[in-house]
Amino acid sequence: MGWLPAQGRLAAGLLVNLAASICIVFLNKWLYVRLGFPNLSLTLVHFAITWLGLYLCQALGAFSPKSLQPAQVLPLALSFCGFVVFTNLSLQSNTIGTYQLAKAMTTPVIVVIQSVAYGKTFPLRIKLTLVPITLGVFLNSYYDVKFNVLGMAFATLGVLVTSLYQVWVGAKQHELQVNSMQLLYYQAPMSSAMLLFIIPFFEPVFGEGGIFGPWTLSAVIMVLLSGIIAFMVNLSIYWIIGNTSPVTYNMFGHFKFCITLLGGCLLFKDPLSVNQGLGILCTLFGILAYTHFKLSEQENNKSKLAQRP
Image (tube, rainbow, N blue to C red):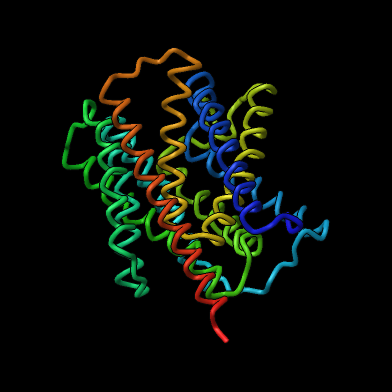
């Protein structure tokens, strides 16, 4: 996408992520519900195919791998495995409403981490956009919010580790002077190896319902298709965070949440309550406000650079 202007590349990256993310939600749901394919095992397949896809890309000259020490990528790989495990445990231990509400807390936690650990400052108007977004997610989920101690512990750990992971995805690209493909090329196999160790504690490996179980050819094809789409999702996430910020990617995530709810209502006639409608409007208002303020900030920065002698 090098021939496109910067804003065109960003729009293309966001569109790829949006389309791939929506496809993978429905495909994964089908694999879980219809086939009973294990969750963590599917994540392992996704990252293994992501690494194979990147290996093919570098063989075709799409990028050149950069020599990195395993210790430099280890925190990223560990935080990824932690985020997968704890978000899955949160989903198992909580209602969907509680799970979604906890996920919405990732954005303010990222702001806190970047402010405290990296000294990044956020204007007050940017911070205020978090209010309607969080309120919107709450309105969408509150009817299904139920608290239990174990579930809240998993949800809290999930939010903290997910926030760290997303911050490090951006920070490591700048710190190590690598692009999204070069970083993911190292992280994907490392995370796959860790998941291979973790899976036996949560899911069967052999036999019925295991990753190496007696799956049909159609099931294997659907799992591989899911892996190819996951490659596009993973690569676009790294690219978006590397070219914008973890907060911007999270805002886009809330937008995808609204689109999914509206899509379910329009395509599958899922019921949409008044509170959910208000929640979607509230979230979209916050996202639009954030986008407007960020674009204004970029224009001001360009003006200041242009005025320098």
